[in-house]
Structure formats: C-alpha cells, structure tokens
Image 1: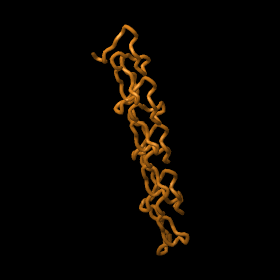
Image 2 (image 1 turned 135 degrees about the vertical axis):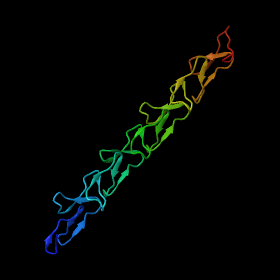
Image 3 (image 1 turned 60 degrees about the vertical axis):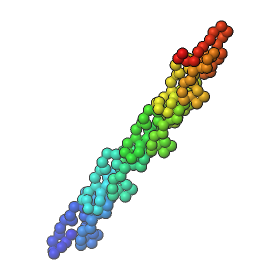
Length: 193
C-alpha cells in the first residue's frame, strides 16, 4: 500500500485492494494467502472471525459451520468425525455432547438416535442394541431389568413375560411355559408352602 509516498504492509488479517490504495480485512471464514495478496477460504474444519488474522481449528467435538465463521456442536444423533458431523453408528446415540455412545443396559437409542428408550417389560435390547425384542420363550424381564432371564424352578412366565408366577395347587410347570395337572398319585401346593 502506498501512503504519503511510502509502501506499507497491510496488518494481520488484511490484504491490499486491487488498486493497492488501502487495506481491507478478510471476511469471516477467510484469511490472507501466504503472500498476503488476497483472501482465501479457511481449510476444511477451520474457522476465522473478521477480527482474527488467521484460521484456526475447532476444538474436539466441534465442527466449523457452513460459513466457516464459528465452531458448533453437531446436532443430537450425530458426532464429530474428521471435521464433519456424522450420524451415530447403529446402537449408539448422542444428545448434545457431539460424541456417540451406548445407551445404559436395558435401553436402546430412539429412532433419531438422540436419546435412549427403556425396553418395556417382557423385552430386552437385541444383539446390536438397535431395538427392543421380545424375551425368548420361558424367559422374563421387568422394566427395571437390563435383560431377560429364566424363571426359577416351580414358576413360569406370565403372558406378558414380565414376571414369574407359581403354578396353582395341583399343577406343576410342564415345559417352562405352562402349568399341567400333577400326574395321578402326586400333588403340589402353592410355591413356597
């Protein structure tokens, strides 16, 4: 820049105009090129504000917005991977931390993967922890349990598979699923008596 008969270098974050008569600041999302002659966009994953001299990387868990003018968290259900927001992998969720993780035991991610849902009584998370599935035959689970388990001896699952019940007097568990009358000459009392 020529001022009062002498050339000057533009200040940090500024470049000379095309006529080289004055300096202008680079806009948000840009920085001066290596020669300081023109403004260029920040590299992917970097940001700059108009008052900053150069672009800088976003902190871990944050990504540059589309204008590359500020860093922001990924939306719920996504996480920051290689300077971009990506959906959580199957079986994981994220709320506002921009980091995906597993749901607590007995829970699965919501459809949008932004919160966890508890499996209802008689269900447990499937192998991939992506959805709740019915307990296998002869197994039960309550809403406070993480998974299904077999009933103890002398009891069978109720129809909802949410708890174990004793067989009525005169009956016994036949196959772990239903009660059958005791065979001739045998008897049973209510469980625990």
